Amino acid sequence: MGGMLLKAKLSAETKEPLWTWKFMVLIVVNLANGVAGFMTVPLVASYAMHLGATLTTASTVSGILSLVSLFMCPLAGVLSDRVNRKKLLIVTEVGYIVTLALHAFVPNIPCLMVVRGLTGVFFSVANVLTVAYASSYIPRERMGEGLGYFSLVTPLSQALGPFLGLSLRDSMGYEMAFIGGAVSTVVALVCVAVLPYTMEKKELSGKKTTLHIRDIFAMEFLCLMLLTALFSSANGLISTYLDILAGERSISNISLFFTVYSVALIISKPLTGKLLDKRGLYIVVVPAVIFAAMGMFLVGLAASLSLMLIAAVCKALGQGAGTPSIQAYTVKTLEPARAGVAVSTIQIGQNLGNALAPIAGSFFVGSFGYEGMFCGVGGLTLVGGLLLLVWYAKKQKVK
Image 1: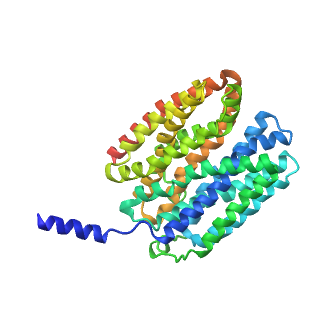
Image 2 (image 1 turned 180 degrees about the horizontal axis):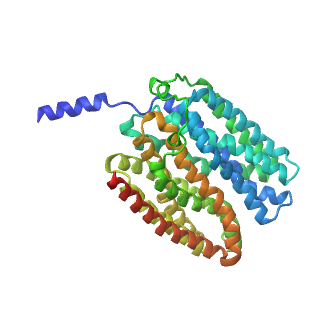
Image 3 (image 1 turned 90 degrees about the horizontal axis):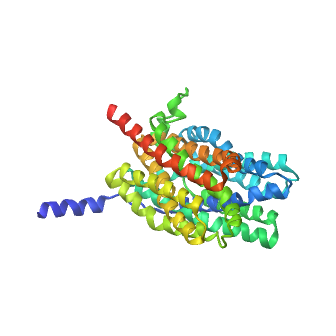
């Protein structure tokens, strides 16, 4: 008995720390970038219409960032695993600052499309780099917990970003809202500048002169990438159409949806991260699929704010818990030298859903209305998500 207690004590003492100052600085970087992004996301569609775009064109403009990110993520993953992440992240942050500020000066829709596309380039590279960078400071046996805490900045960004962006727009105009996003990214740049970074041996040994498909895309996680796309399609539709839907149904204070969603995420994410580390992927992701589907059904049917807020909680327990858990699982499963590929593979799924869902949604709304669109995506998430998990489980057994 005494030997077991001594062993447990030694294990606790030798447990690698998670909350290092480098990890915490990267959390601030992720938060600043996230706030900048979410300050602009709810503004883009209405800004495009302000410049004279139709609803369909505005939806297309809104999806450009995610569409560009879809193609940039594989390149970002390759670069992340082959070059000095600090230097690349500094260049990326500078580009992100410039393109966010340029939103304020576009004279027409074509220019807005170009600027939005360039923003997508730097946005996607920054996302992949920060997660891969942070994973190098997280003990592998605590990867789920560490990335769970790291991804907590997403709900904080979703709560702060839209509030700051819409407040600046209402008080000072669209231009100052976009400049505000650029200022937030300056904070990220300063934080990156103080971080030390030396190429580790495992990364140096991973450098190659030839490029293979495994260096660009983790094919073993195809099923999980597609599941992430389903989760993110819900996110893309809600970000684009929730405000319009609430107006049509005379639901006031719809901004509380994002507040409740954020609070629910903050409470649940540390728990789901630890559960992932202890019990594995399925114990977290299967319930996440069910909750994500419930959230979409409720958004489609809700005629009151109270039902919308219940939907927000379901969304947090669904897409909000599922996507970070899948990301942590892939980073933990692959060797450290492929951390960037693991991150970019899952982010391809995120960008696929975020990019295509708003564009497809603009056509489905005309035929089936908002109720049919949201409920249809809920059904697709439930059936498609469970089938993808069964497919992945069978592939694992074959191995």
